[in-house]
Amino acid sequence: MKLVMLAVLGVLTVVMAVFAPYVYRTEPTGQAIAWTVMLIGSVVALIMLSRVEVLLRRRARTANDETPHA
Image (cartoon, rainbow, N blue to C red; front, side, top):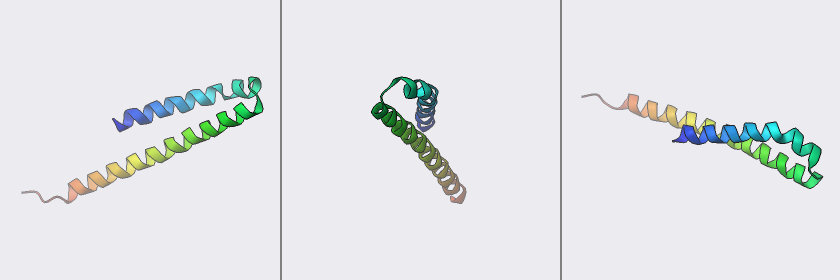
């Protein structure tokens, strides 16, 4: 489920990046700044959540490797 959420956030980030030039040309400065803040926020969230996912998977794999086998 977490990978699906990361994929959705990634698609949203790409769509925002694609529409950014249009927004900068047509919208007032305040809305363009808000768009930029949201775009940067989505990129940062995507990076952070990806990193957390990698760390959680690594920790789960390490915990499974350390369990005693009967």
